[in-house]
Image (cartoon, rainbow, N blue to C red):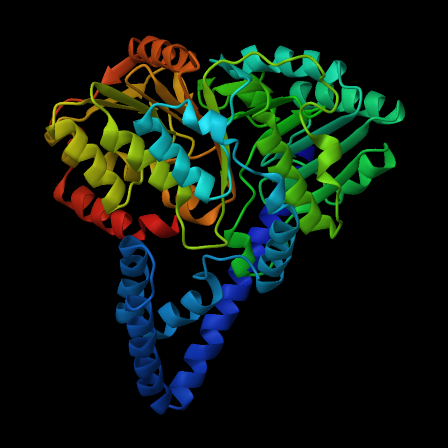
Length: 506
């Protein structure tokens, strides 16, 4: 009974109920008014038409346009109301202004070393220049280590944290009390008590139901500076559409971790929710860590309204020895503050330039036309294109939506594998034994257009071989999806078609 009550009064459940009541109240109020004044129906049809024209003329993804045009045309009243409340992809004006100001203060800290770029093969330098133009330099003098699971990365994170002497920065989408987080928190508390500068950012939406309200105050009482991104308010709000999905850990400016792994027990398989949880991550040691330090401090300045002297956090500040030079490493961030889908452009560029093979791991496969066409074109020109998706879903509707894309891709020659032991949360792409990207980016609309994300593009580091071998080992545990699967009834095909139109909003 106690367990049942805790679920009923859970903040997430209460919030969902409040939102449902708010939506029902708003819609019923408008409809009842329309019944009293029939002329309002005509007014709303005209408004709906105006909104549709506005959407068509917006410089945004076509799939996103269709996803909103259809409900507005069918239900003008309801569609317009929901569009006005929820369709804005960009964060609040206040947050945008803060990011712009923070960017102006620190952009000069991320400068490209021309000697590094000059040592890159020309075809790789072209890709690197795109991210350089977006503000993220490519770095040498960096070692990169790949982890094929959360349980592999967990001890490496703990060991590195225990060696911290100056500062620790953590930024995660999900934090949940348990073995993983509690072990890390114990070290953080010890380090903070010893005078180490410890800071934590977590996404409040991502932690709803996982952390108690005001958890940041608990950490502050332990000497750990902490702030929540976008504090979750139980009201319909456009800013709830944007989440800090990044996973960043920086220690003393010279070592960083990222990948799909959040700070909760299922990510290290201490808790089983959907079979075996397959995730991946990467550790950087060297100059490229600076990109992650910059990302964190920019976010910190925005959320806390502070101004930092970035120079004291540079990689060589507390590491005077020369870093090993292991290829080219380019950490980058993506965000909804502009109309530049950085992550998608990098993915498409890798796929388009692949010559032999490209393997992709993603928990959610909801590609827009550009991404789908890039995969199809690569397969049709003879590239071995393989996708690994979950065999056990965490969200059944999204799983069905993912599967709805299979027939088109398979007919074009793309090979699709479903990981039968459990859920794949890894987000990676590897190409031709040379190029790989490991990060937080799902192949869906939310990651590519709505969330704050990060990743590491690596060329010639040797990590590509590790990612390739890990993918091949995963495929041995997968079921290969053949042409004609999944079999769907007429009703099922209609339902999938409706899901596809709603894909950008899910």
